[in-house]
Length: 361
Image (tube, rainbow, N blue to C red):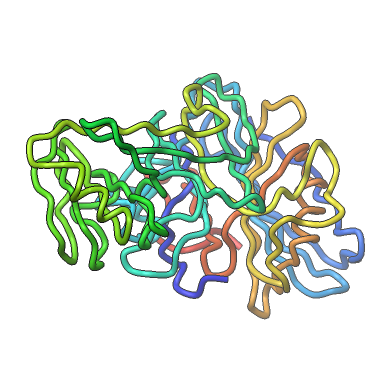
């Protein structure tokens, strides 16, 4: 579990009825005492908080239910306005984007600058390429507000004027690229990470400069190509200042119809069933965050479980899966947890969400 994750790298936010559901006890626990808080956040969004005293201890559970058929609701994957590479507290992310609620999102690299492990698509634009790890899935939403849980694959290449091409490792990822080219766009921030690499600065499709150094400034109307080893040799041997650069990127499944997408971990519920084993398991009782949706795809469930404290012990990943199933999720995905697990919600009568980490209970 990340330890510095009170400042997430990405978040799932709800912009701009009332739905509640009896929360069944986890199969192995007996509920001895239960309290709840419920209120509408805005038209199409409701909050429910549960405090449970069970045979296994206290649990605090926060549930946002979103009506995906409501024209009043917009959902997006957002980041720090200073760049994807900079972590930021969730409450500020929500406030800066005038959202009414939000939860933390993808797992991320514990470094500064940082980057998400998985994909990020915002307003239909690829902000960060997906990981090719087969054990981690992603949540996505189409322009028609159809929710999906998908496993993405990524390939790409940079093509020089002489026809030579070289593979791309990723877009807006920290690291050395594993011998392939890394691409940095303005969404990453003002500069690339600091590392000894060869940098090719591309502005409006043409090479502006090529140099060896520790970092490069990212032009507002362009990108930076960075590489070591063979990738470095390719950039220096096949490009000169003024050359045109062609970049071909492919994400599978195609993201052309996706309004937003956000990386996650294991699938918790798959077509109404909990998998016999999880492809990506975070062991132990911990704070947890998950996203899921109902069988008809009309309701989105955003769930945060408090943990690592006397007032809420947290959950195992299996318990989280059972919780999502009990809440009505036909499909559900584990998101980053531990210290990252955060939900902020605008209370009735307030203009913006609170600055505190978790509300109401």
